[in-house]
Length: 222
Image (tube, rainbow, N blue to C red):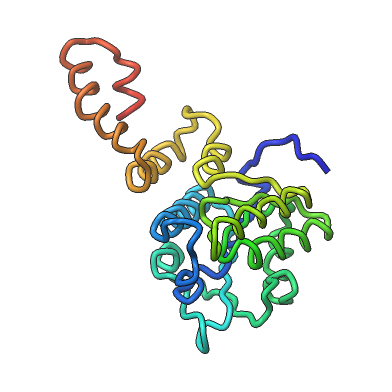
């Protein structure tokens, strides 16, 4: 199955899988804080676009610890689904939560890529879902493990993305004012591009107002 369409908010559901301390301790494929930052970007973007989010953990009270607070704080009233299964798709509560949304395009991110992302990706595809995974919000015990998991997921027809790519596909047009400011806030808080946004607003925006030059830019950045 080849996927030719872009993501839209009304068709998507996000699953954040096992972003927990014990799982993070084992990550060596990425700088750990970058994974946390990107997972928070995905969580905030989903909330901004009213995309349902399923949170899940594995053995949180006996081994892996609670969901990372940076993610939990985005959804303070949502209790993650705690599992014993490595493959979240084999947990009836997780699968039911996805099915309840009625959406067939699942955006996955989790720890580790080779297990907690690849396993449910393959299983959900077999059940007729389209799977997209935010690779930069995932991590594994080595670069090789992460890359092999990505290749296996791709071979099963999952689509690799980045967190910002997911948000940009949901936004699609900067004229969509309802979510424009929210996207800018996420970019300013979590991306290097946000440094340029702040600079352009403070410098180019002010000069444009004073000199009457580049009014469109000043408006777009306000």
